[in-house]
Amino acid sequence: MMERLRNSIKRFLEILLKRFGIVLLTKTQTEEYLKPYVLTVSPEVRLVLPSVQNAGDSSRLIFTPTDAVTNQSYVWDYSPMPQKTRQLPFGGIRTGHNVLCTDFERFHLVQNFLKRGKRIPVKHTILIAPWAHLLDGISFGGYYDFVILVVAKLCRIREALPETVWNEAVLSYPLFKTDYEQDYLTLLGFSQDRILDSSHYDVQFDRCILANSGHWFYPDPMDVLALKKQVEGQLKPQRTEQKRIYVSRSGRRRVVNENALITLLKKFNFTIIDDKPRSVAEQVAIYKNASFILGPHGASFTNIIWCEPGTHLFELFSANMVVDHFRYLSQLMGMHYYAYYHGIKMSNSSIPLEEDVFVSIADLDQCLSRLFVHA
Image (cartoon, rainbow, N blue to C red; front, side):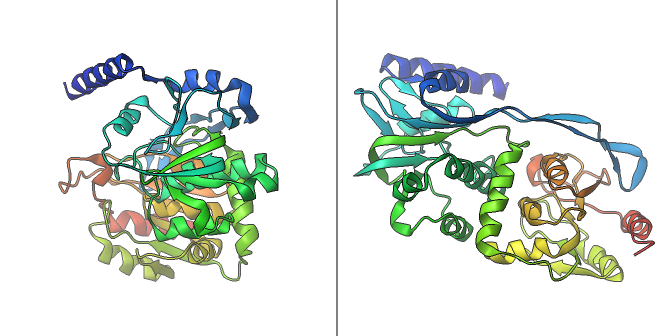
């Protein structure tokens, strides 16, 4: 019922915008429109992800074998025709009657026309516009989204551009307004005066560098490797230890019996990593020096990009929230992957994304004893 209502609202708003001369292009239509401006394109990649047993019950599968298929990844160097072209508050580009869709579904583009308030007009020759989506704090707006959908994309763009163009361009999108955002943008070479929030600034430009978001769960391997190359090239992290770490969570998807779990993990010489803000350099160092990582599914595992091949990731899931972002990234990084869920539904939330996790201590004890029998 709610889905039908949502779809009806979508259709109504799109029809209404057309009456005002505004056409929301689909991703396919956007790629066709930008075809003359393609700077680089990488083809889709297909990886076969093997099945994954439930670490607490080997007779049950958490994941069946999966074909993980990425989308084609583009970078465009768009020089607008004489028709009016501008960047919208949520980072997208309107050119003439058309609103380009370089990221995900078109419905969020409507929000650009509902936003009130004037923006400050500024003029720059070259604009990099890497992100064109409303940050709702639920589906989009977290650490994983920023690292994979913004920073990795920026690394793709950087590798496609001459250094002189990269150094001259300004960056504008709806900022996430976090410390890690500033850390990453500094590592990519952006000074504060070259970073603009599109929700506050109306950037006029002669050239616009755009790139698309691919598959949300299965990012282009070349993007991930470009990100790793850029960040590690700046930080130069060294592996000096091989720690077993448990990554705690303080927000949604917490382990409800975490005290008992931590008591067990100390038996296996785990270091407990508290859920608190850390610089990008600190996060890179933690994951670079980990030999075994265990914890509930969460955005911190985006940092397995910094892990050494052969590192182990053991992911804990709630009964109704089992997704394979990090199963995929683990395979890209040459890691060993395990997954566990007990199957008890927690009553803390009706939203699967926010449901807490219950862990059977007996299950985990047996499983870790098997894994570390030769350690």
